[in-house]
Length: 271
Picture 1 (cartoon, rainbow, N blue to C red):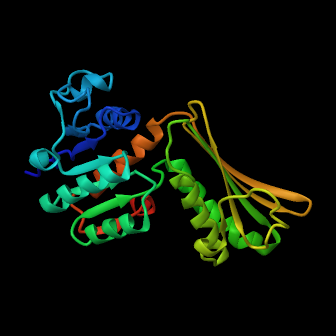
Picture 2 (picture 1 turned 135 degrees about the vertical axis):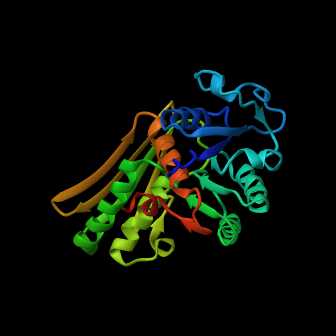
Picture 3 (picture 1 turned 180 degrees about the horizontal axis):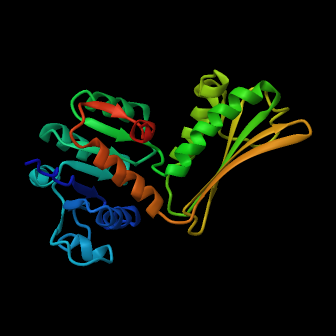
């Protein structure tokens, strides 16, 4: 008799935060088991039930601080925190052989290199955005950039809530990479992140970024292809963090049991 596969056991880093609570809600809807929940040492929520904190029934999972100590309770750790917290948890997951879904952004090149090295030992899905709609937009942007070519200037405008600490957003950078790939360019050589004062005429072939921070905006992104006499805009607007959380939970379920490697949401969504 064939037995049904056991549900993926997840853990949530930053369980008391806005995204952490959304991930716990999404996991419950997807019938994934919440095995552990973590917060920073000294956080007021340590010791509270993670399910109740997320507005659900009690999950009988108390929020703790030590990822390594609870490693036996989960298969995949989902992280939407800050780079320093991510890397500390990454070390614990590598030591314990646990997979990770990383939605944190704002890493330095050196920190990204640590994630790349860890992916040689554990399976990791890393993305600047886990929304299914955003990942569809990335494919559209690559196609548009290839079709429109150098006759169209490209500007990327993103808006987020006042608490977001990194800029441009990880999603905006992903969109820039998609445009650059479609155009056959290296984003690092063509991106323009700041304009102030007498900037002169717009250099041909550059990809501009503009950032807005304020209020409670969950996440708005628009990529403009501006030609003479016409422009094309591809826009994604998020009205709830649950769309990011649902994508992360889907990635966690996909990731369980995978061989070591650094995967993207495109891998998760590819049939």
